[in-house]
Image (spheres, rainbow, N blue to C red):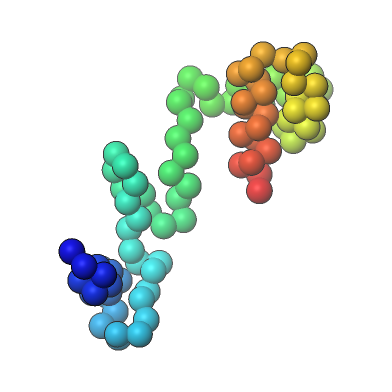
Length: 94
């Protein structure tokens, strides 16, 4: 498939026949392993891991972002899994 064919396919999916515009909100985005709708992040956390970092923050008497900053400032004091969770929390809030 060449570039022009790809653009024409996108126009068909978007429901727009105008040659100069593409209506992206109606297009499904694809990622390896399946499809996601535009606006969804595509990030999946295993159900057994959901809420673990929040629980750690609550036990420390801090909010999630406050705890994430604390963990990232003192990486040597925490397991690598907690540091990764803190980094994810900081990036996910952006």
